Image 1: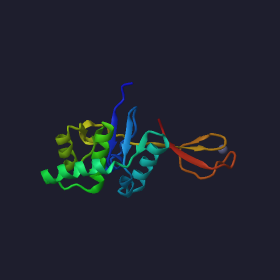
Image 2 (image 1 turned 90 degrees about the vertical axis):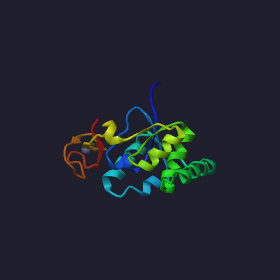
Image 3 (image 1 turned 135 degrees about the vertical axis):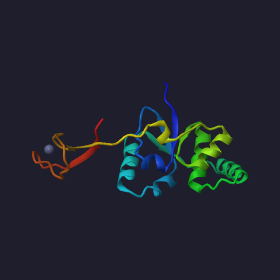
Image 4 (image 1 turned 120 degrees about the horizontal axis):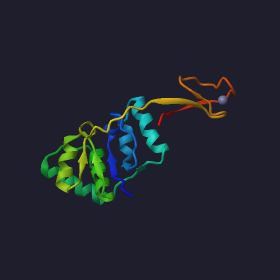
Length: 157
Ligand SMILES: [Zn+2]
């Protein structure tokens, strides 16, 4: 298999990154950083599609990253530090817009990517479908007019 292992920070979800064929990791703290509905939706899409693994790094890896960050003077949040720790533990690349993270990544020899630069940004378009009769609706309604079941939404592939 030729997929990548990628660690995603909050900016990946905020900027509209969607899962491809790769394997994704993030940390619990990132969820708190997602403020707007769209970012939260994207995050749950990752989660529901089974594409992302939420990990808590080993305290030893956290300490390792903290020490390096102190030496360079990069101001990293605990979330940033955890993300880098996960990248080391899983031998993943990082997707982040944060220069501090990118800087520490180069020290550890971790590959990193910026969403803006790599052009992997995508826009989600939604469709609405009935959980009963599976009819697809183009606009948001809550109840199916055919069978009275609930309407849910999913991204159009
Ligand atoms: Zn229906």
